[in-house]
Length: 225
Image (cartoon, rainbow, N blue to C red; front, side, top):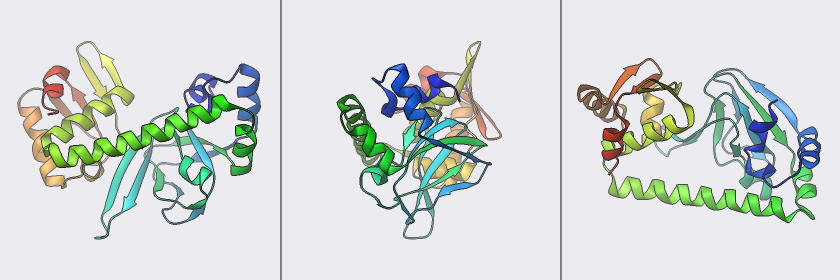
């Protein structure tokens, strides 16, 4: 496990090397194959997780039975903190987009580490505030932004976290199917595909299997609103 990846998680920010090593030693490792589920929505749980390598997706089942994809996580991101603070049914299903490795911290270990370490508590409160802010942004986008704008915003977000710059291009290996990308945007696959085809026709990007190559980031950014 790369220490610098683990240090990206809010749980570790502000800790010295000795504390990081001790906390890392208290965590267990789970390895997931592509498509494997880490936990299901509605199942009780109280562990906190840090993604070390790969990609994970968090989704919920809608009333119609259609899955809603809420987030795609990159290495260094933390999740499951709501159930860690308030043990109960999981609010999402977490599954691997590609082969992934996750570190797990049990509830009792977390409470032990929070006691007497205000810097950890502050970092976790910041994580919860950021989650609430993202939720507010999602609601705002659904109300005020059209589908092409939401598609552009999601592509730029994926590029920031998974993109590889090659000359004037940004190659984004997001690993999502067309249906999953549509779930992430919050629209039908047909509408999202239409927006992607329009962006490609304008020369802003090039579509590849489970990937997108951004050719004109500035134009794409201008379409967000």
